[in-house]
Amino acid sequence: MDQSSTKPRIAVYPGSFDPITNGHLDILKRSKYLFDEIIIAVNDNPSKEFLFTVKERVKLIRKVLKDCPGIEVESFQGLLVHYAEKKGAGFIIRGLRALSDFEHEFQMDLMNRKLNSKIETVYFMTNQRYSYLSSSIIKEITKLGGSTQDLIPDLVREKLLEKLKV
Ligand code: PNS
Image (cartoon, rainbow, N blue to C red; front, side, top):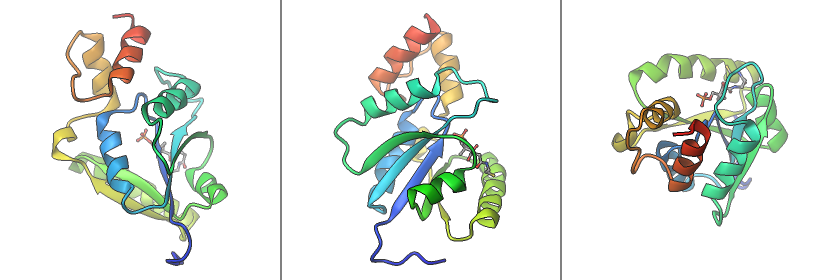
């Protein structure tokens, strides 16, 4: 591992973000203390079904984060480590909510490390406030008419209601 302190610390924060939640934003806010530049990398995986298209997800995050210096939003296809290499990123940011997240994250970590041992994944424990939060549960609650107050930005709620026609 060569994470020289003189190089800008660039990190990639990857995910589906379908849609972005306050849990993601909390991790982003805390990550900002550690990195010079953060690239939110929205996964464009044609074999996975998303509610929002990749373009919509990127656009929505950009709007939510407007006026946030040091944060870029892009989409990526293929392997995350290849994307991180292309962007010159030495770090991957991931959030951990519960023990149930661990197994999958551990597997991804080991595989990503095998593919590129120079890229380090950094984990943030969820803020307790958002420990039960996921994009899937937000979609379900919205669809069924429940309140998502304080869990997603207002703009995301607007777009969700529009998309789900509720
Ligand atoms: O928000 P998610 O759905 O938990 O994010 C998962 C994501 C996008 C980070 C993961 O599926 C990913 O990195 N996909 C890209 C393909 C890849 O690199 N796979 C190898 C990791 S083991």
